[in-house]
Length: 359
Ligand SMILES: *[C@@H]1O[C@H](CO)[C@@H](O)[C@H](O)[C@H]1NC(C)=O
Ligand SMILES: *[C@@H]1O[C@H](CO)[C@@H](O)[C@H](O)[C@H]1NC(C)=O
Ligand SMILES: *[C@@H]1O[C@H](CO)[C@@H](O)[C@H](O)[C@H]1NC(C)=O
Ligand SMILES: *[C@@H]1O[C@H](CO)[C@@H](O)[C@H](O)[C@H]1NC(C)=O
Ligand SMILES: *[C@@H]1O[C@H](CO)[C@@H](O)[C@H](O)[C@H]1NC(C)=O
Image 1 (cartoon, rainbow, N blue to C red):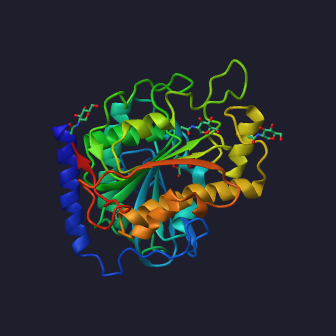
Image 2 (cartoon, helix red, strand yellow):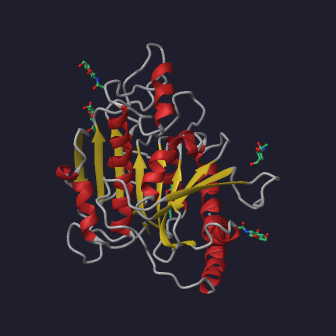
Image 3 (spheres, rainbow, N blue to C red):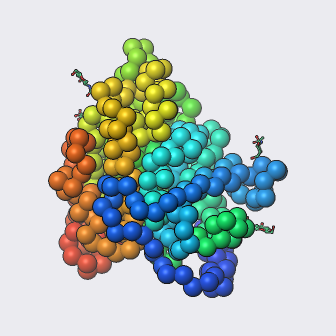
C-alpha cells in the first residue's frame, strides 16, 4: 500500500511542476445546459494504446479512449472503467461518453484486457490515474489538433465504472482516494462475474467502505432478470447496485432505472447484439430514441456529479435528486442519504463537498 501511495504522490508532484508551465486558460469550462439535454460542445475522440507502434509505450494499461470537447479550453476530468473490470472496450460506451464530453468534460475511458483480481486491477488504476494526471495535457499538446484542450486537475476528478468496473473503482478508492472528488457507479456488480472470470468481493456487509465522498449509484431494474434459461443474470440480486449503496457512507444517491437492463447504456449496435444473443436482459420495448434518452440520462447524472462535486455548483445536485428533472419516459425509483454534514462544506444541506476522506 505504501508503494502505491508513493507512486501516486510522485506523479502528483511531477504534474504540479508540469501544470505550472501550462498556459493560463479559463478553468472548468462547461456549458450551462440542462445535463439531460445534449450538450452544446462539439466533441472529438482520441485512442491511445501502449503497444510499440504507438508513441505512448509508458502507458500502464492497454488502452485509453478520450472523449472531449474539440474546442480549446480547460475542462474537468472523469475517469471511466468499463464492464468486466475493463475488459469491455470503452469504445462500446462511446455515445454515452460523448454525451458527457459535450457538456464540457474530458472523459478518460480505460480498457484493460486482462483478467486479474480486484486488488491487482485497483493497483493498475492507481498507476493509470497517476499516468493520466501526469501526461494528459502533454498528450493533447502532442496531438497538435487538440493542443488547446487541457485537463484541469486542480480540483480533482470524478471516477466512474460500469458493472465489475464499478467494483474495481470502489476497491481503488480504498487504496487511494485523494485525487477523487465524486464517484458514479453505473450498474455495479460485486463478487464473481456471471462467467466466473473475476472472483472477489469488495463490499463486505455489514461493514461500510472505509472512505467517504459524494456517491451516485445507478441501477437497472432488469439486471437480476435471467435473459435466457440456464444462463446467469448479468447483475444478480444481492450482488448488484443496492449492495454498493448500502455499503457506502453518505452523502449518497441511488437511482434505479426500472425498465432498463444491465448493458442498455452501450452504443445502440451493441444493445442490438445483447438483445439478439440474450446475453443480458434488456428493455425490449424501448425505441432507438428511448435508448438514446437513456444514454443521455446516464451521461447527465455524471455531468451533474461533476458540476456539483468539482465545480461546487449546488444546484447541479437537483438533477440527480428530484425525479421531476429526469427525462420523460425514464421510470425510476430513487433514494438518498444526505447525512454527511460532518465532511460536507457549508454549501447547504443538499450540497455535499467534493472531497474524498479515507477513514
Ligand atoms: C498496435 O497498435 C496498432 C495501431 O493502433 C494496431 O493496429 C495493432 O493491432 C496493435 N497491436 C496489438 C498487438 O495490440
Ligand atoms: C509527447 O511527444 C514527445 C516527443 O515526441 C514524447 O517524448 C512524449 O512521450 C510525448 N508525450 C505523450 C504524453 O504523449
Ligand atoms: C480499507 O479497507 C480495505 C479492506 O477492505 C483495506 O485493505 C485497506 O487497507 C483499508 N484502507 C485504509 C486506508 O484503511
Ligand atoms: C429496481 O427496480 C426493479 C424493477 O421495478 C425492482 O424489481 C427492484 O426491486 C428495484 N430495486 C431497488 C433497489 O430499488
Ligand atoms: C414490454 O411490454 C410487454 C407487453 O406490453 C410487457 O409485458 C413487458 O413487461 C414490457 N417489458 C419491459 C421491459 O418494459
